[in-house]
Amino acid sequence: MQWAVENFGPIARNRDERAARVVEEAIELAQAEGVALDLVLLIAQRVYARPPGSTAQEIGGLLITVDALAENRGIDAQYEAQKELVRITTLPKEHWQKKHAEKVAAGTADLSQPPNGKEEKTVL
Image (cartoon, rainbow, N blue to C red; front, top):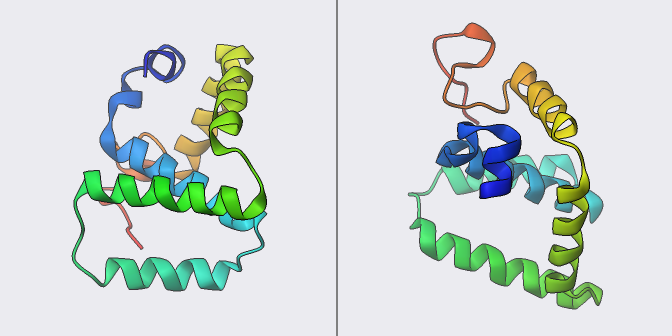
């Protein structure tokens, strides 16, 4: 968390922002595995049609699911997480500021503010 706050500022502590980044990473993983966008949208609609679960339980489910996928693919999830941590912490702060600014401009980051100056956020 300290690294995130140093690179992105206080928005890194915003739970909506962190949850949106989890969604982004999950979609990128699905894309890397060849999951069709139509299926991703169908899953999102199905999930949002049901009552929300508890955050702690859903985090546990997410981690178990990632571990199962990694095992299925012959990937050591812990090793990859460590490798990614080393990679991201070696990039300059300006790299992350630029990426975050692009997400803010697209309305997918800095979720404490309405996107593009609009009064309401659009939710799938």
